[in-house]
Image 1 (cartoon, one colour):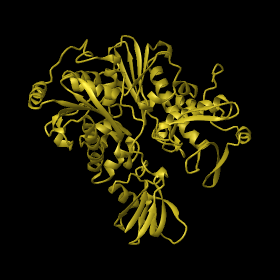
Image 2: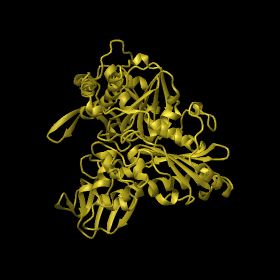
Image 3: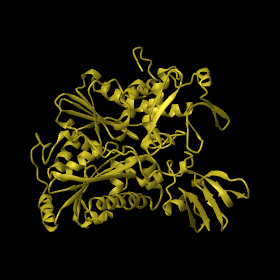
Image 4: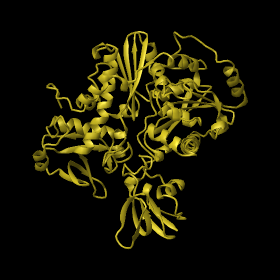
Length: 561
């Protein structure tokens, strides 16, 4: 038998010779961190081989004494009896700091947001909903935001238009890769890839979330008659069982922008089988219904001047409104802010360092999520570190350390990167005594991510001849924007120094909530999704130039700590 020690528990499974350890673990509910979709390049699914015979990249090894650390995605057990141990850092967190709240000041009840567009019926759907309402005692609805990394759900009473409770979790699809490109690749390259991805989001993420939410509110699944989904284009396709393959190929056209209404049973949601599922329409292959929902829920679509909506995630999606004209684009920031590619990076889960300060003596003070012992750095902690380290002279504009200063403070580390060693700053010790640090290689990845965000904003505004000081409103959306320090983001050159910032929280979920209550919302959303001109950044020379410029930390003379 294959014995696996993980998360304080011991599991025993049959060791199947032709199956990877990562596949065996995943099939039995052990969530290894497979951020690179099993290509063996992220080093996040490492396990310790304790005993037995194994094959690693086709090379047979026998463990008789000292354990050996290997990637689970490239390792198979060869002997009938084998034992492995999974380090805590190789497991995906099932909890975390996921935004489920939003600015509700934009609306207070039904149709509060449908001003200039008026009421538009939905060809009998309203009558169908009315008949469903009459068939249950207390009709309920679900508003769902499906993100590449996180999923958030609100249970609502459709009679009173009030939220009864909320729940969130990480998207189980992360075991197949941590970005939309890897999910598209997985769906396309594997015969049952799309089916497996849909199962991971519906059966292994949403259904358990819904059960938990219903239990906490004392409600029954059979009373749920409507589900409203907002998500990026790839996630929405997969949830509905539609292939995202065409989104990964030029000209990146999705099968649908305006998604068909379906029944819950048709996609496997464990609620009333005939419950209606509606999805926020997408603008394009990489500008999804989450942005359409955000444009409505923030009130941007009603704006009379110039405004910018920025949703910072693995993809940074940007919507510009200019006196009646709409433009939208997306810049691939990558998953660095989720901890991927960062040696001590972490998702925003318990123990992640989320806020950080450095004084003139290089004394580092910080807070962690849930005040748990430090286990790594999440995105907001990374931004703070770069801003603080640059301000006190520890980092230069290129992201290189002042080595004498680092050594004098006793924080200098040299990290072995194969044939070379990389300078790093020790920040803290984990509960197991492991150094939590940021290396110059990590800083390079963070600078690339922040450069993509800044270049996307700068290029879109310049393309449409709009200055930053002309913007009347800037809406920062999503969980990362909610928890990050905007001053740190400005200081390191990830965001321009906007004057009219509104932190909106989960605007995608807010739009999905609106779609539950107003039968006219879907038609309004389809109208809004048709308006933006999709700007392809990779076709603009200025984007590459802006990106290269933004790889540096700007040396503002008036920048103060």
